[in-house]
Amino acid sequence: MTWLAILVAGVGCYLLKLAGLSVPPSVLERPLVARVADLIPVALLAGLVAVQVFSTGPDLALDARAAALAVAVVLLLLRAPFLVVVFGAALVAALLRLL
Amino acid sequence: MSEPPEDDRRQIVRDSLGVGVATGTYGVSFGAVAVGSGLDVLQTCALSLLMFTGASQFALVGVLASGGAPLSGALTALLLGTRNTLYGLRLAPLLGWTGRRRLAAAHVLIDESTAMAVTRTTREGARTGFLTTGISIFVLWNLFTLVGALAGTAMGDPRTYGLDAAVGAAFLALLWPRLRERRNLVVGLLAALVALGAVPITSAGVPVLVAGGVALLAGLLLRQGADA
Image 1 (cartoon, rainbow over the protein chains, first blue to last red):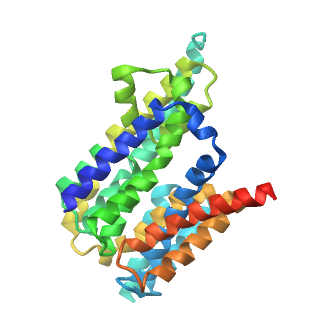
Image 2 (cartoon, each protein chain N blue to C red):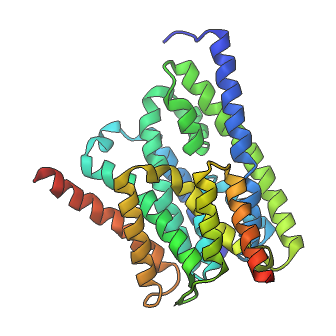
């Protein structure tokens, strides 16, 4: 199943890229299409952050991951590079679990 | 369109390589996170080679890590991949490639290669920025994915190193530049709340897709607001 998901999503993502280079640009001129397409990454990424940080299986949870996310916010406000943000958050969660 | 001066070209290559190195090296975090989410090294590398679009890759392994079905992970990855379609729409007239070149170029059509191409005033400049960024990221991203996957496998339980917390931070970092717009901030907060509301009542993987529905709803409502 995992391999199937990798192949389907991998090939699908390529075709989505190719479609953009191949379809007439007038599709984008429809305001609804443009607006929804603009908002989809925002909504999905925000949903992913929330689920990843504040849930364990079917339960909501508040643990070391929330503290790590707060650290990530501070690092982003300080304009830290991507790797510093990601591994900084990991480090904080790991340290909190050691306590 | 005329050939840009040699200095311009060098500047574009230098800038693009800088972005390529900065972005490609964070493949190490994807590799580590992916094996921490239960993928093996081969599956992790296959994702970077085949899918090659960071946010979608993180989404797929993120859904798997939270116990979601592989296919809902795939669906989330595909939805996130739709933004590359928009990039393509904007770049197509600028790059002007057809046939086999277009087939090859499509694979390295991602956030960064688009960003380094759209601002150019000449076709040559856009092509140089696009290819230098896209190819350097492709090579480094795949190399560092392997490094991260091997290191992640060697380390054992990812929770000990806080790698489960790293996924949330990675998503937030990808989202961050878009939050400067107030509209996006509101949609993002709503989507996060809706996703959390769906966590206890749906199976894993579904909450994120429900959050995606917020984008559709907001798109429809915003039009009504604009018409009124």
